Image 1 (tube, rainbow, N blue to C red):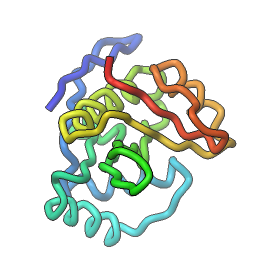
Image 2 (cartoon, helix red, strand yellow):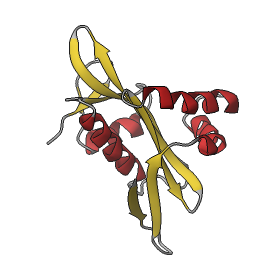
Image 3 (cartoon, helix red, strand yellow):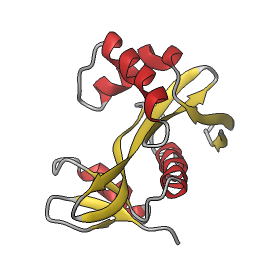
Length: 157
């Protein structure tokens, strides 16, 4: 678990980054919609429950602020014939109204540590070509474009 202080014009908030839980599913569904996807509550609950079977290969974390889920990230270890294992960030979203407060960065950092601890030598993220703001975010935070298809990678320092 990671505690992050989120600055605000009014005051600072303590935000917790922790493993996702089934109780988070409804709020996570809302954030999935903000990311531009649709997923039923039942599907999200099932996905979260399936994490228990693959703890070494996949994880998801949420940013929680006063009981409200304000962001999530999911990461998995990918094993390919043609390359060494790498960690893939499969999704990241911070709730509207909470963006640009370093929550996305903290979620990424938390996931990066998880990936490196699980044997990955590279953290990779793919991003739709139309997501220019996301591309700027990743580039600003140590990822570099490694393929025309906009696959981002980051190596431990």
